[in-house]
Length: 153
Image 1 (cartoon, helix red, strand yellow):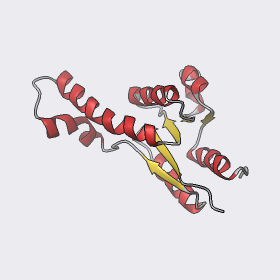
Image 2 (cartoon, helix red, strand yellow; image 1 turned 90 degrees about the vertical axis):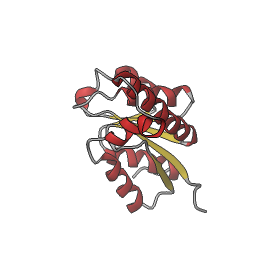
Image 3 (cartoon, helix red, strand yellow; image 1 turned 180 degrees about the horizontal axis):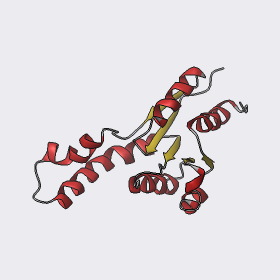
Image 4 (cartoon, helix red, strand yellow; image 1 turned 30 degrees about the horizontal axis):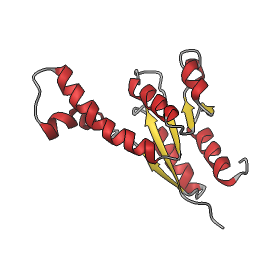
């Protein structure tokens, strides 16, 4: 009997290949997982509001409009997810990732947080909301594999 398909939302940092590494490992292990994600093209994500709904006079309203449109996607996909994975990188502030982690936790979604050990102190409150804290994409896939199959890798 094959396990049901799991929807896994991958939130957070967009400047490294962590999503691709998870996708490759999930495929290699043939896990029944559908990966969901925000728009990771930074320019497209930032400008979606004005591209779709029209220009704004200030950067504040441009960002505000884009953030709201992105929230439609993010909140909907987090609600569809069985598990939410949030990656925090060390070079950029990922306030949206912190919001996504909070949104997922408030919705009762199992949360896996991913970050380097150097960020442990800064993210201690976020880590406290997570059911697992990983340092690598491969650890994330190992957690997913265990949750799905009941067998540690």
